[in-house]
Amino acid sequence: MSELRASKVIEDFTRANGNPVLSKQQLESIADKGELMLPGGRLIQASPELKDAAKTALANDASLYKRLETARVSGEDNKLGVKDFGAGWRAVVRDSLETFKNFQKNVLGSEILSKDHVKDTAENGHIRTSKGEFTVPDDVKRAAMNLMENDGWLFEQAEASSHGPGDDGILSVADLEDKIDEVHNDQRNNNDD
Image 1 (spheres, rainbow, N blue to C red):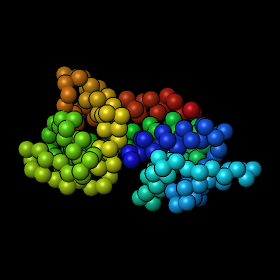
Image 2: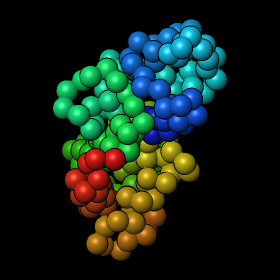
Image 3: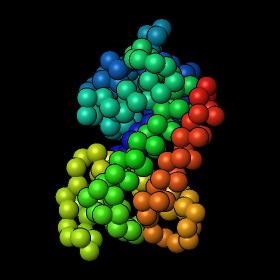
Image 4: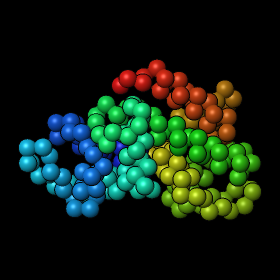
């Protein structure tokens, strides 16, 4: 499951259950036991999708949980609330774009990529280009998964953002840099949601 999908599933769960503030330990309970005890003693059984989302949030030393939870406040407070998701989502998008841009620039020599290149990276953890075939690091695979979430919505947003040919179906480093700037500006303008 992509990090963007996981964050959306967890956000939807918090909203559907009266906006509980989730701690890391509560997400661990969802991931490990498939259940969550809410304040007041109400036990909720987690859907398989919520359980997968919790596992994704806790993977890699709880990397996604930490990014969501600290996007609005300085430092960790172990409280993931509904207001954290907007800023957290933008942080995940920005990090994914940065990670993929660095890989594309530094490893692939700024080679332009099709949607199929990024999809293959997301699904299989490797990419074949004119530079050769590469097995990608886990962070690049996660970034590609985020780019391909919702039928490649973020890929399409990025590849259409450059001042170059625009919506041309190929992803360049310039496309990614422009989208990163756009997300950064959006994050500065919306730092209180």
